[in-house]
Length: 236
Image 1 (cartoon, rainbow, N blue to C red):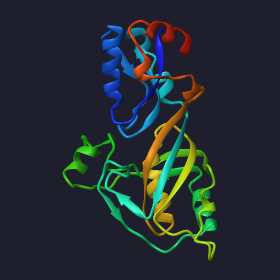
Image 2: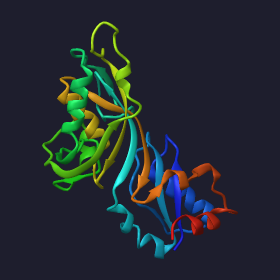
Image 3: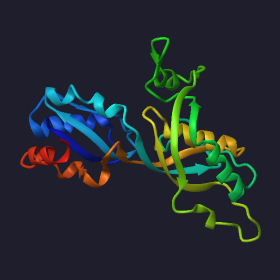
Image 4: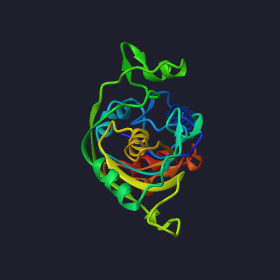
């Protein structure tokens, strides 16, 4: 069964990647195992031909690893760089408060999905409502954050006078999480716990279960001549 591990570039949708693979392979039956937002980059598993697409659900339930940058002190209507950005501010935060907030967002949690998501409530996709300026209550969903750490430690950036960090402030993080977790919602919740706001400025998926970004091929390097070879050696 041919699967491709693709390193998705920023600025295109997961469906755009599927369309590109259709053109490269000449196959109509192509699908992906887990959407990445247009601004996000990283690992996208693509199934080529019907037998492969029938098994994409195998990957959907696997845990994911992400590298992200969370900006504290500003909000975004979409919780990512594509929304309207508004400065929120707030009191300076300490290294200790940040670490405490991160710890509180680690483990088994109930997470409220973002309005800008494809989840359906009452037969309507949330992002369709959000685009109309409508916000509705969303039932929280159980997720597991097995690792949530800063990398590298951003707390080296201090104001020099005290153990505090002026807002806005960017925190690079690494997160291991269960399938269905919204990293954008983690950024939102971290900001709220610190008495301010937060959103993602960058997001990169580096692993899906045992499959790693190190073994993926950039989309622009996949051709009609090499795709079959890459598919055969990437995922058994």
